[in-house]
Length: 69
Image 1 (cartoon, rainbow, N blue to C red):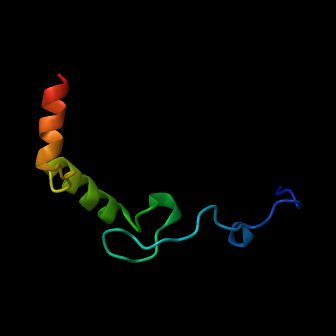
Image 2: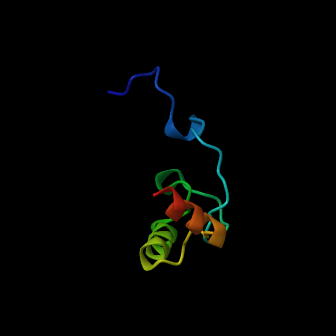
């Protein structure tokens, strides 16, 4: 028997504001935040694992690190 003090799931406010998915720009889903689906989550993971996402390093930064060692 359901407790009468519980709110139905439809009236519960989301914990996070829906933001655009970084892959396809559709609104994000709570289960896959910040992505909209498992597909977009997997696309992002593939980009990280394949090396598509890199942090650029300026030439001067490489030399400064070598001098400190």
